[in-house]
Image (cartoon, rainbow, N blue to C red; front, side, top):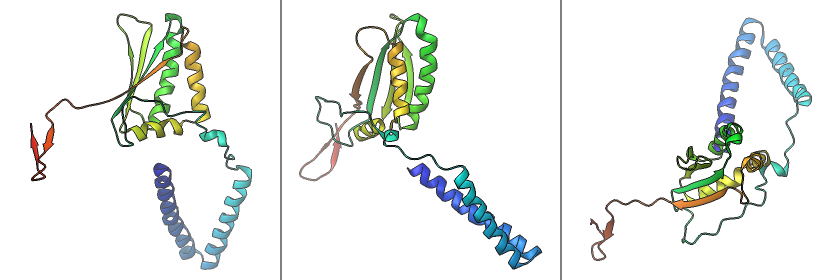
Length: 197
C-alpha cells in the first residue's frame, strides 16, 4: 500500500508539473482560450479512454488468504517477536527438478513481493531429493501479514509445487525464531542501568 501511494503521489505531482508546462506553452504561443479548450478536450479524451480500457473489477478472491490459520506454536510470541525463520521442506525426484526450479523462480518473486527477506533455496548433499526453501520476516506479525497478502493466483503456485512433491506427506513448514548468542545485558533494579555480563 505504501508503494502504491508513493507511485500515485509521484505520478500526480509529475502530471501537474508536465501539464502546467504544456498548457502554459500553448497559452504563450497561441492564446489562453486555445489552451483551456485543448486541456478540456484532453480531459474528455482521457475519460473516453477509461471507457475503452476499464480497470479490472475487484474480486474478493484477489485477497483471499484461502483458509490460512495462524499456526500453533509452543513459544509465547508477541506481535513484534522475531526475526522469524521459515523453512519449507520438499521432496523432489530427479525427474521433477527442472520443473521445480522453474516454479521456485516464480516462488521467489512472489515471496519477495509480499515481504519475505533473504529468500534462498537449498539442496541436501546427502539426500539430493530433499530441498529446503528458506526466508525470514522481521517479526511474527510480518509473517502473518505475508500469508494474508498472498492472492488466489499466488496460491495456485503452491498447488503446482505440491504436484511436484512426492511422498505421502505434503511439504513441511518449520517455523523458528532467531536468538542472539552474544553477551546479554541485565538491568540493575536499584539504578535502572544496564550492566553487560
